[in-house]
Length: 162
Image (cartoon, rainbow, N blue to C red):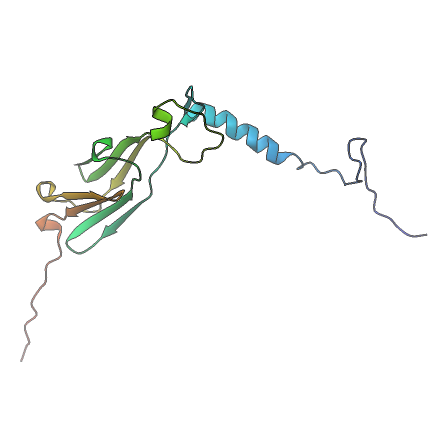
């Protein structure tokens, strides 16, 4: 007599697939995503949700300065603010989608995010706030934050001894 593994089948499983407690988890996750997304933003009449989104940034530290590079596509200079206070760099703003603003047509599918954002970056050393410069070109923001004189490294001359 051969031993055969027991395979429970249900009437709704016509292909004799074994029962799994994890089956259907994708639809459960989809429902949970929908629930949390409804709290993250409000549905606009056009069917597009406004939500909190996070622009991608790079923060580099050099000997003399910090450099922040942020991708802010589809925004104008009036749509965002950059500020520094107590060694904390703040980047905040709001991105709106041009097609959603005019109210014409309806979206069948949309992956582009819109809404407000606020990013805070703790700087490891003090910066000279009066010399901060920022440029915005082709959807990329670049902020140069020179370190304060007392925070910059000092080269020490070494004397040869006889």
